Image 1 (cartoon, rainbow, N blue to C red):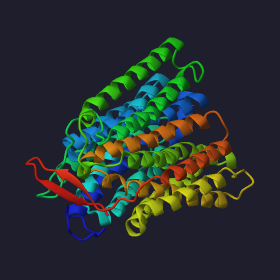
Image 2: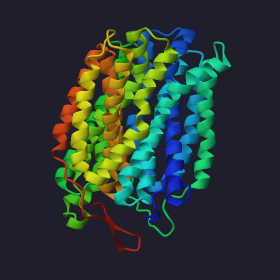
Image 3: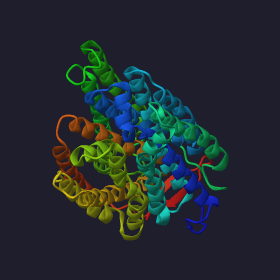
Image 4: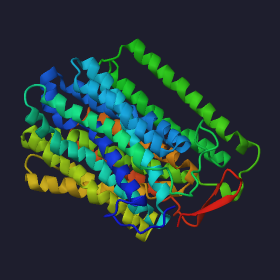
Length: 488
């Protein structure tokens, strides 16, 4: 753990790692959401229907659900430096293929694969947790998440203009291709300039890679229950692509996918048992235990916060354009104000959490986002545009500050499992996104915002079960010695 002063103007030591990590995350979001601001030109160029476009929005977040779990496991095992670098390089490929796709099938395959880049977020959570002490961790994770998340706003602000600069029918292709090139080049920058831990610190890895470790029989059952929504979300996507949805998959293929998801869940549960079978033989010593309910609560909260953010930034440009009869460029600029709030809101949520307590902060912010989405559900063409934008920004503050407060807690549960816990919590954000976007494809915008408000209320109730992190967590070095890590 680095003990140097927290100074945002510095580009040395832990601050260098923080800055390079949020830049990596920024690029992943720039690539991940390079499509939404260019809806009008992409739809016109390739002759897409509205249903086909909405299907692309869902596909954009679908693969991120299993990807975040997988990437979290790989990060804990191999370290964030290597995993982040590889992810940035590999995901530039589907970005390039999407940019130069000539058919809807090519768009679908490329967009589905690009969902993997959304897993980059969990890598930086582990990296930052290795470099910053608990008293600064919420602020540092908030800066990482907030400034990185701004990549979606940057896409909304810049890509339509870049497309116009290049001009012609292919302007959007070059705009998207540039984001892929940025991802490829930064993979080398990141690998050459960061390390997994400060010099002399120990990088704690999980005992095995087969699944998340828990520390009691009851928590094992709870873990299996919490896995179910991840598979339900993938089944929901399959339904959306079936003849009952946009009719992209045949009934037979859809049935095969359903069966495959059931078998995959059984295999996943068996893998979790193999990792945790010792807890059925003898109890885990008290000093090595952690409460899985902490993870479950954070999962529900991230479903409502980050899940709603992903869904809203996907639909907001079109919502503004259609509600207020604006051009896509202007609508994208105004809608970008939702994500623009990430610059201060998410770090602010982490900072408040550091100063005033994790649980209290989350309770206040979750209540605020429920009220915020209720207000958004009332927006209509009769509203002044400035008031609609102000309402969006106010709601966005609570959403993104809530995200920062969630990940101010995640690294304080069990250090060697931080990547996996972050992966599961992050995956729940994408479960929320798939759920909300599917609902959006079936209802109007007002009902869509009301549904999000209702799930925020559920998150508030779940939050009452969370215990404020305090004391220390225990980790064992490879030589058998014990290290106590302060969490509050």
